[in-house]
Length: 217
Image (tube, rainbow, N blue to C red; front, side, top):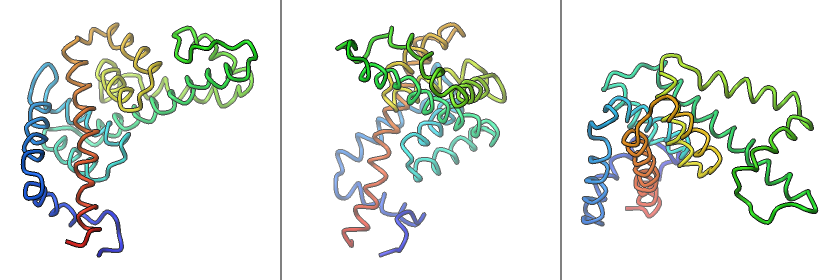
């Protein structure tokens, strides 16, 4: 057994999945192929989104494979780094927006409903009690979402996909509205969400290699 949990040679275990669960293996392969077909989003855009999502799932196999796929589709390293920073920004935003629940819990008269859009009105309180950190967050979020090597529209589409991976309802709401303002279509956003679905499934799929390796086959 290797001393590292993530040697690249673990990839050879993927070939055994068809042997142990052929029907499931084929169904996942068909699902993944359908998700990454050219559609409202290009193959390049889809692979860029996948790299961003893989930084949420923190699956090294997924980061590796989708980085290589994105590169093959013509994505530059600058584009991929910007996409990963969108993930970092949305992750930061999830913590910031969920601070409204902490504030609600500390309020003796707090609302019984945990997820209300109006909760976002309480974000100013975070600035009151941690002004320097909150100011830093706003600056970071603004920079990662502005147009660069990637368009502002694609960044918002990425953010919507990432928000479905982090399961932050505030982030989904805010970034969907931002994407809509930038003329992202239902088709583009729907395809991006299915990339998230495939990457979440793919993280489990690829880690079966670790289970096989641990089992000692």
